[in-house]
Image 1 (cartoon, rainbow, N blue to C red):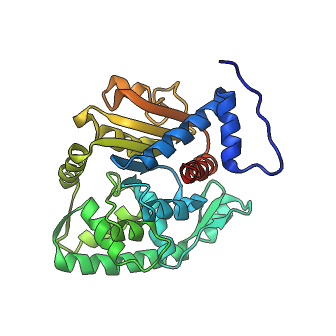
Image 2 (tube, rainbow, N blue to C red):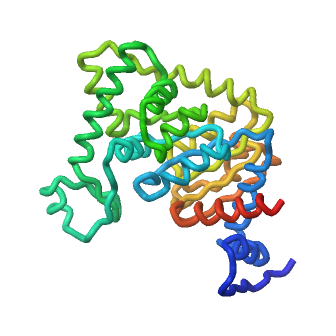
Image 3 (tube, rainbow, N blue to C red):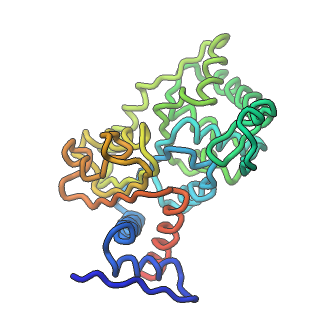
Length: 307
């Protein structure tokens, strides 16, 4: 099959452009189109549980409403998130915000109480509000339960959030479990540690595995949307090894494979570990999640609408 040249026009929709990528079929264009088709198939398949992992600064990077929408529309059934993305979601839920970096020197930012994530700024005042509000919520939860899993904790937190844009709140209200194996490695984790200094409150990391394995074993098929790499990607993959691996998956990452990191590993490598089935549909895209995923999600929705 030959490589077709990509054509564009003034009145093209995003899905039209992705179709042109598919006609080309090679390099990044081909990988993006395959990821879009797999995503559309996962959403269409009523017998597939769709897991989504959130690694990297996706919530401060503008992806919050997209994740929330996917939960509300039933396009994702389970989330594995970094502690940082949960923290930044709650920071906005409590009235805080993320700001565009204006090029100030980092030592100057330190003097002004501003932390920088690439070209995103977050103020210490917003974190002060976060610390106050999350402590109030932890007080309420601890008064009812002294021993809780991470997933149960995030569910209880979500029920107490009054923000329609919060993915933590949307997940709780739509019975979409959130797992966060690295929760302690975040400002949320720091607040848990501080809270535990004078409270008898146990957050059980191991307890989540029983619930997660029940979901995997109970699913006819499992697909995965892996945004970013690291722990969240591995936890999503590894949770499915107990049943022979994922049936379908896409990943978007900026990591490279040469150093052997999981974040940069192509999904095909997961087949050797039985984290993805040998006959599974897989697509790996190298690029910025905040650019590529919105494009393929919009195009996938258009494909589904046209069915």
